[in-house]
Image (cartoon, rainbow, N blue to C red; front, side, top):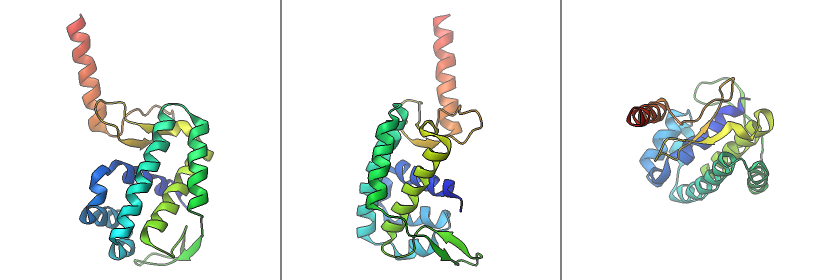
Length: 175
């Protein structure tokens, strides 16, 4: 089971911001990430629960960016208790049998379990420093650093380019 894809879901939920409240945007995200069944079952109650989860996950990334490993672990442990993992074998959308972390309950429950377990897996396998918040002003998007040298500082190429251009211009003004 590739738990990194679940951790990437956590990043996507955090980075949706207020778009998470838009059922069409959330359904589109679910469909893009191969969660078509979840997209079809999405309710307003799920959206409200996911907005609350998004805020909690954002705090995990903020603590990681601040280097507060103990707070990251404490927050993830609290989320793991609230969203227990129930692995199940699943076959859907023409895919062969594979493991999912949960299939029962509400859509929000399944997404919460996956997101939290994915982040917990990244933290325990790769380290807290693999979770980050974009350093390009004013962006505050979350990201997973899956680079081999732990060098990622931006959520996207766009933010990296913008920050590099700004730094170049600042150096030129100072010269």
